[in-house]
Figure (cartoon, rainbow, N blue to C red):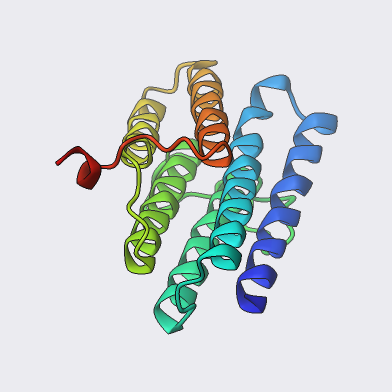
Length: 185
């Protein structure tokens, strides 16, 4: 668990730093984006730590590599969100992945992160909920919508995703899991 703890401590500190930067130095429209990353890291840290301590699958090389990949996607999202003020690398104000806009790059990175968490759960023997798959789809839709460059639309979508993540967190912490596909059979 030490490997996991260190990785997600770095991700959490970076996301909270960006959240505070958005709160104190940027417009209100920027705030939901780092909030989404902070909530994702919080959910992953709390849920995985609880699961590992209570039921503990073997935290072997595969799960560690998936955690590393997930953190890299989170840090990539933070880098394109705040290319000049993040803690890792200063890439200039035109940070893009594959030529996508910063918000499209942000949502693509988070989609990939959440997809990695689904694979992590499958490898650990934890059936992912349908809501997990829905969150990935929602983030991919947000990525697609960001190509239209409508003022405020990205922030509104981020607020919706933030609310869905809070519902997901509450459901996970309360032990009320949305039915997985395997449970429906």
